[in-house]
Length: 340
Image: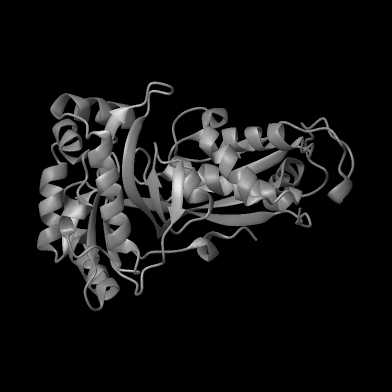
């Protein structure tokens, strides 16, 4: 246990890209696909702020006590002993705030720890596109866990990973952002060395969303899942390719995404976007996760600078086509996202 931190607290929730994604069969016990992948956190990130709900209301009112919808009493660290009803504010994201995965993260943290803090407000400033294959919702849930742990003083990495597994397969790797070798359905993790040098990541989101479940279902229709032995071989191959801090594997086929053709079949605009990334100078381009976002990697010398120039060069073309602006990002680690 650590000392509880005073609110408000802020944390960044970085997106993830999949550096290779190989998909196996559906598991009988939970209906999720087995996979082998490297999950890499990048600097494209949402910003989360955790504060007392009553403080937020008073700030919005401008002065005075403001409305008090919490059932808790008291001030400061000793504000009552009964848990309040937490709020999640996430402008621009459809659906009820209570259905946000970050809201679920706060609920499971309270339930697991018996943390009876008064009502909290979690505000999410979204930059990661929704339903884009970048793990934005999972990143927010992981950041919410980090913030709750810091605010409560119950800061146990083992606990947070246990709770993350309950929330979704992409959440565990984002509790401690960085570079992780993922297996199972994404919940079995092994930390990989950070890349020896930063590389540029060109992120080309699309004005479309894809359901992860729909993409996996289409992938199952298009191809046979990889067998257990083949999946284990792929996992070992990508582990070896990254174990000496390589920015990306020399064998680009290890960056293959088994979900890419399914994403293209559901969203045909993905294919010309892959071509667009390559023509802009990317060393390799692929769909991230279940898509539809296309990622171009610039791993050779001055990769980040080349990615920035590529993003600038594509900005006008993408605006004219009604597509989101290109984003240039770099790999990040846990220090980038620390709650403070």
